[in-house]
Image 1 (cartoon, rainbow, N blue to C red):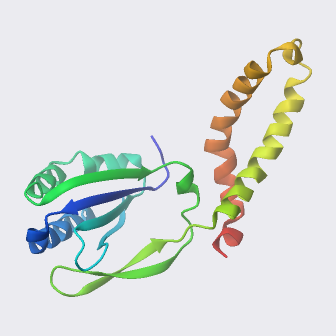
Image 2: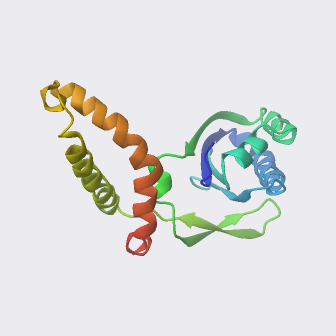
Amino acid sequence: MSSEPITVSIRREVDPDHVAEATAWAQTGVNLAHRYPGFLGSGWVRDGEDSNVWHMLYRFTDEETLLAWERSGEREWWRSAGEGFVRSERARRRTGIEGWFDEPTTDTISIPRADGSTTTMSVVRTPPRWKQAVSIWLGFFPLNVAFTYAMSPVPGWNELPIWLRVLTTTLVMTPLMTYWVLPWVTRSLRRWLAR
């Protein structure tokens, strides 16, 4: 199981005739999740005042705490309560490469609550794609060079078809990049990535 924080983003289409109920329902979900260990925060926004598309985010400290919430009876009850006015739903977990670029969180937005007040929530600001590409390259290039040097003296390695050498290389390097190199590179470059 992942020990890194996991963010779930959800896009919901809400029946426009039931906005008041959907607002109370969304806030109830936030309140329920808030009681679970590992809960780091959540929020929801609509595309616009007249939009029936809502975006929700929630984050837990790791996969174990996220699964405890997602498998809970309270969440199941809450989701069933929304069946009357939620028309469609699409959820995505941010556990891949995009999660490496989550820190630092520096922006905030105000989110309306059902009672008319607002709450402030932190918003993840990801670095530009070119900085992400540089970060990946800084991890990939040295690892690829090291692997190439390590494999070149292996008898028969250079006689293998190129597709087999590339397959072997990617099978070895992908887990190394995913679980060790890229997390280390992004931690090391945190300040630069945040600028």
